[in-house]
Length: 135
Image (cartoon, rainbow, N blue to C red; front, side, top):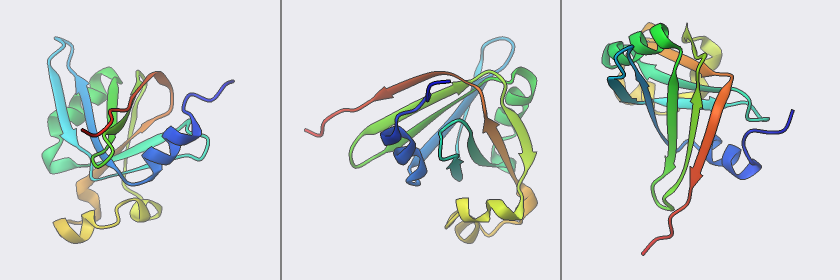
């Protein structure tokens, strides 16, 4: 099976850039939240995003109900972005092995581990990428 993401896009996602997570409900109403961390498998076939549960209840409910998720990874200085979408996202609790993916988030928010959820995007439906040059 061919790679879904180029090595450059895998490197962008792995670089700790901003990640915005979105889904929708059955009536197609959107829900959106900024992720507090993310991780990508070296081959790019699995992406895990970490959300603060107390701020993401609607988004997590929509993902649980529909399985649909879209994540935009953005490097602000360069305006490079990668969007991934999946139709079978899974949720799980944060694990101790996930701690490295949350470099400053846990310290800056001073929250306990069980206040985070994460969603794994294993089957990416489509990939959109864009690059905009700086003016």
